[in-house]
Length: 158
Image (cartoon, rainbow, N blue to C red; front, side):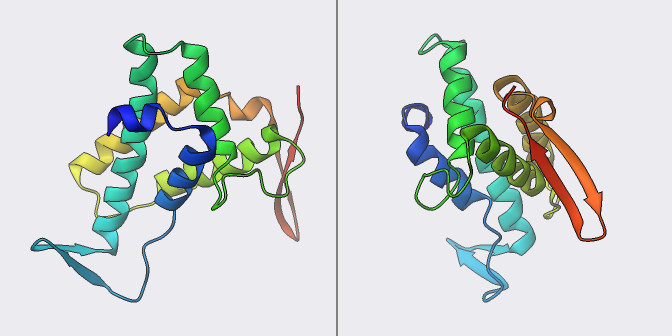
């Protein structure tokens, strides 16, 4: 699985990450998978663990000299920017704007509370550390503005 994730192009890794941040459905409060009862909280924990694993494997790719750090950063940033069903940037004007929007969605999902298993807590911590190393410092590109109509984000290229 590690090698498979490391070799996914951004157009494929983005939709995978997009699927992993999709909230579990409300239709079945508990799902039985091989005798293990999975409720919404446990599903969120498992999704967060899977996201952390994907990001960890990207970092392992350059730590194990499979590719350069720059290649790992490029793959992470472009995959996050392409977090959609189609692997495209959607309607954003640039990959930086797409990256900022989608990185925010990824960060929001990783902040959610599931069942709070020890594995999920560890995975969330690990995700935040690795994403900080692999991802462009999003705050360099983004500024929040609040108004009566809600919060907005503005972006700049450099």
